[in-house]
Image (cartoon, rainbow, N blue to C red; front, side):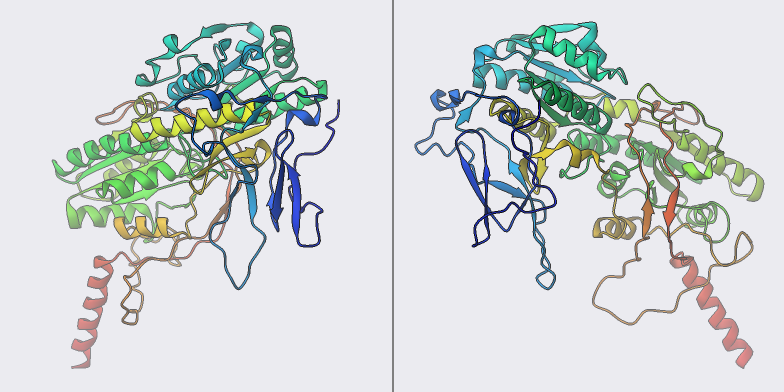
Length: 564
């Protein structure tokens, strides 16, 4: 059955009055006037379910949520703006999303709801908190007492592996890592899943997972629409890498950055305790280097941070080998943080195979880089190298969420429930500029969130680590060549900052699933998904700071001696 009216106004403004105000419906019986706005709207059950009945929101009778003016409920005209910084010389129409939260009217009565909750993909801190708060919101706020936990990911729908959930059963699961419901990769068969929803009378589905899982949620939603079912589907984005598009950040990210400090601190202690100590820490980040970047900034003990968005080379005067040699001579120890997706193009392209989600497998760049550095120092230098490699991947993603992530997961879960009870569907919930919004699933899966190396955050990192751009110089691979110092800049009141590297990359989806161990020397190893080839331009920069200044000073003294 086709929808009676399209809900999405993406790419064009609604036709409206001459004063530029454009009407749109917000749930049964209410009207929104969006002036000069591009509303990236979401579907509603009334688009394909005729004679949809509405009810008073039971929260109106809940003592905790009842206010004098009903201020707790979202105004039908409230939207969240995606662009909060506008260039006044080049203004453009902003994009808006519907603001998340409870509506005064709902289209589900509590006693008619049979809800299902499923977790898919890899583990992430906060999964259990989301599950717990979904149950509590349904049970306590909307009097829904038929809640099913789908065991083992998508295939649990048609395998009929379910757990009956209630507040007592999930009361303390937020204190544990992992997922109470179990998870898996793959297993998405749209027809079999929707058949199961029909057979079992499930009419609300909450799907927690990354971009691949959200693609599955969209497929379920489209099949539900095709069949004309009164089934509402909500996605809750989950990725520890923080690579979900549109939203401010993903849950579990803060916890991951906090826990990564332990590994970096251990690497720093090991490195500074021995002669020429080098600590190498591999962190999550298949295509996005956010965890590595933020953990490095938080630590301030890191000398080099390598992420997928910035290519690097090993050999030559502008390569990583030369800089590590110099840094160890100057400081006696150093720490390198590398994201799991960095440097994949430098390793032999002999990896084949995919995981259960169809993602190509990554090679362990941490082990590879550690062995490469050991080989270089053994074969080309007389320096001793004491290298310690630490891979805390599973230790980080398997822990319970911290306080800030617990609060964040609560808001995500409650927002998802409010939306489905009001009849909205086919959306992902998340914060946009600090306000929770309902975002069309298509927008979330259209791209991945990547570190912008032209942004000030990356500049702050480079300023902290003082690392150069590890790129090929004009001197090629001649290891005897010396870096050419750049001309001294004009005096400035602004602090010096190395220009970031503009890089473009093509991405595909996939969630990290790497091996993890705390390794004192060499060991462990894991696999994941091979990132696509890197494209774009990089600038050449062989100025290694103090060392380059020494070279320049020596050249000046030599020139002065010859002049005499």
